[in-house]
Each structure stands twice: as C-alpha cells, then as structure tokens.
Image (cartoon, rainbow, N blue to C red; front, side, top):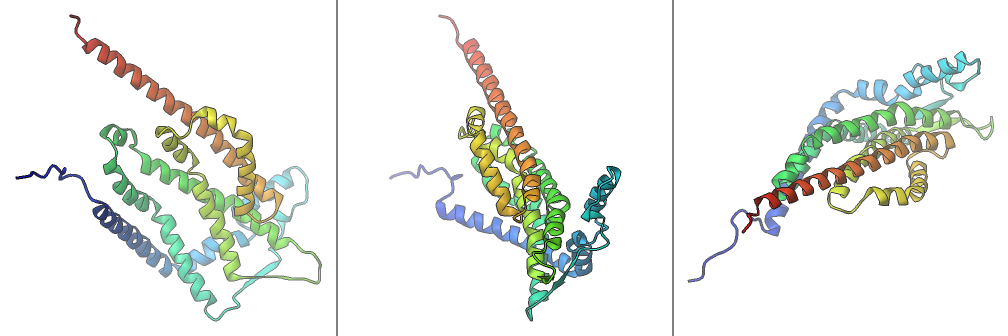
Length: 286
C-alpha cells in the first residue's frame, strides 16, 4: 500500500489563495472601519486637513513667509489668502469626494495593519533566521510611510497648491478649481511621497535576495537621477520648485539605501565567515 509522503505542513496553491483571500479581506475590513470613522469626522477631514494648505496660516506658508521677511524679500507666502475658489460641478461631486477621501484616510491610518496582514502571509515562507532578522519591519516601514506622508502634506502639497493657485496666464482668467481636482492634488502628494519613502525597505529586501548590490546602485546613480526627476514630475504639478523639493529627499533616500545595501552584505559576509569557522572547528582530525 502506497504511503502519502506529502508534508502535512505544506499548503497547496489553492490553500495559499484562500489564505491570501482572508488576509485581503481583513485588510479591506480594517480600511473600511477606519474609513467609516473618517466619514463621520467630515469637518475635521475637510476643513482642517484637506483645506488646511489652502489657508495662508498653514505652518508651511508661515515658515516661508518668516524666512522671506528675515532676509528682506517680498513673498507670495505672506499674502492674506490664495486667489482661487473651490467648487463642485457635479451633482454627486461632494458626496463622492466625501466617500473616497474617507477610504483613502482609512488606508493611510490603517497602513500599519495592512502591512501586518501582508507580513503574516509572507513570513511563513521565510526561514526562522530570516524572520528574526526582519523584526521591526512593520514598525520601520510604517514610520517611513508616515514620514513620507507628512512630507507630502506639509511640503509638496502646499507648494503645489500655492504655485498652481496663484498662477495666471492673464488677468482675464480666474482660478475656480473643481473639488475633485483639489482633493486629487493633496491625495497624490501624500500617498506618492509615502510610498517613495519606502525605498530603503525595498532596497534592503532586494539586497537580501541578491538582486541589488551597492556597486549596482552606484553604477546606475546617474540613471537613477533621471528616473527620480521623471518620478518627481509625475507625482507633482509641472513646476520646477515642487519637482526639486520632491527630488531632494528621494536622492537622500537613494544614498541611504546604498549604505543599507552595503551594511546588509557586510553582515551576511560576517555570518558566512562565522559559519565557516564553526564548521572548520567541528571537523575532527583523523
């Protein structure tokens, strides 16, 4: 009688899909729950958070105004208000903006839990040492994401709104922006910068699996600079100031990623050398 040699701990492809389905369901549920709370906090989400960069008492504008005043320059950041209005041109425009903004707020706030669920799905396929070495992944990745989101909200979004809100081709044209367009500008700045700040984490894991080395990162540094500028042009409005503001932290993160990649390879070399010495000591002379 033939015996079943299949490892009972191994899962079939369909079992993996079922497991992934439940992880995704829990991720979506968390986003919906947090988004429902954000939906009820309409005044805070819109008046305080979303429309904050539209008001000239926003911290970023006050900072640039104080800097300009200190050096004796005139600046648009010292104006009383931005010369544009926001309106909704569709019957369901405000309701749709409310729904989607709540969902994105749920994703941003619930990002650590989304990472946790994805990590629970991936981690069983790793060795014990790999799981041990990856401790703190959720905390560090979440911290980087929130730092990027804050950078997008306090730097990229207000600079973009100030530039586009004050730009005029003629005094005959007035700026009356649609609500969806304004929300999309703020959302793109926050979400894009949040993911861009995950670059060190991505390089760390690519180095661990052997796809990236410090030499490769250095070799393609110039090409990466071009890619960074293109990426900055995609996620920001078409003004040079905003693109430079986004490009600078990305280049800094790229340089940090090179040091992280070098550190990962250095630690791996130490472990391999230690393992080799241990194996050499375990060999008994005849």
